[in-house]
Amino acid sequence: MASIMQKSQQGFTLIELMIVVAIIGILASIAIPAYQDYTIRAKISEGLGIAAAAKTSVSEYFISQNTMPATATAAGVNVAQTTPYVGGVSYAVAAGVASIKIHYRTSLSSQIDGTHDTIEFKGTGSSTSGVRWNCTAGTLLAKYRPANCR
Image (cartoon, rainbow, N blue to C red; front, side, top):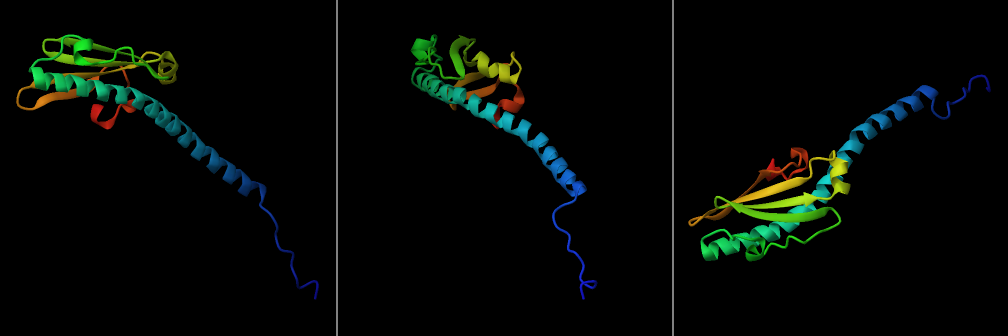
């Protein structure tokens, strides 16, 4: 009777374990860069929040005065505002177009590549439709910009 019973296999073979390790390695090689891009985009969003407040101030000024504010103070833009990832904000007006530029800190731009560290919002005013903002300017790479700024 003992000769009729066979031993059952226990555990995994070396090949099966190597296949599992290879699959995990492939998944990790895809997931890690995607996660790093995601965390950089999350850090970029700090500057977008600052820009949103500045855009609102400039738009309100334009609607009430029918002209772009000449200075950051007149616009109500806090150029001294910083965060752990935003190093500063600049405001300028040229030919009736307002420009709000967000400058990211070296600690963040070094994660990107060291040179692509600004995003610029350009506002063009119209007496019928208010201020329209375009955010395709600046040196920030397209993959880190919000979808409407690519």
